[in-house]
Image 1 (cartoon, rainbow, N blue to C red):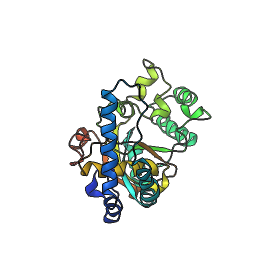
Image 2 (image 1 turned 180 degrees about the vertical axis):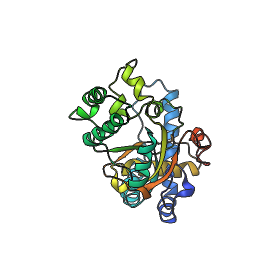
Image 3 (image 1 turned 135 degrees about the horizontal axis):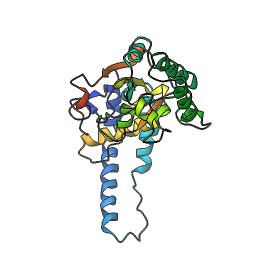
Image 4 (image 1 turned 45 degrees about the vertical axis):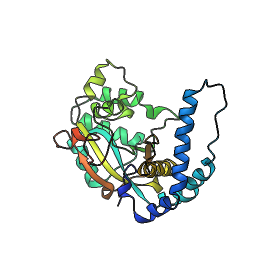
Length: 264
């Protein structure tokens, strides 16, 4: 079962054993970090930053113990998008596919065939797409977040408001009529996905976040460590845990009461 990286109750017994065996180290590291932070804030900021004497051992815990363990596990991640009903059914049936120029071209073709876009508009979107950039961070990936984000958060609002994601809307001017048109295609969808850490490049981030989640159970107050992550391979339908649409009771409650134990 996927774990919630922010919820210690979902951690399996083996992962808990690794953390609980070093509970004193985790507590000492974060208590020292917090004390040093307050001391710096109260100072005149002319002294060099103090060294946390527990930092090296804490880093070893994350890198040498937690990373190999997290590599074997899956976490529940979240993806925010806007899809037509047909596209949603395809995802449910065939799974999630990474973004490519070919997949975007195909999706645009379907919208032309459905008379939602003209051939000229589809060609313009493809021409302007960030996918045309040589060093784009979007190609060949499927992006997610490690923590649920409220659907009215400014970070995900555009993803839910405009069909096609950043590959489509990102390079369209704010008042462009084409931008307004893609805002009429489809409807918002939020996916819950059980993503194996092994298919991502974010094992270190997941391990750091797991250690922080454990530290909070010890009474420490480290900052919550949410992170973006991506898969570089397709995910089959079995990886989809849940699908939320505006017509569902859970949609507006994501990160505000859903999941039940999540505290934003």
